[in-house]
Image (cartoon, rainbow, N blue to C red; front, side, top):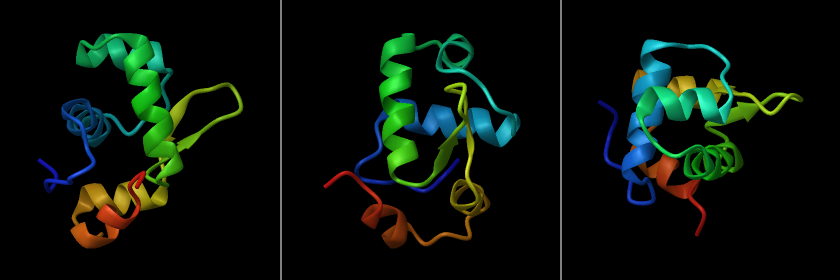
Length: 88
């Protein structure tokens, strides 16, 4: 499991657990089906994680881990740096 981040919601941890197991590009609805959340809420969290730099979005609206997101999952990105990426 990834480190505790103050601006993360419960779903964000599940999103990263999914990507830890499946380093693939997926749509918000496919991801939502796999982590058992509503697609609209999943999409809003994916957009926030994209704005933070932890995910990338393709032209077709699919999401994938960014290099920064991979560093985070690997434990190579300090928690304080992730905190600074937040929406505040």
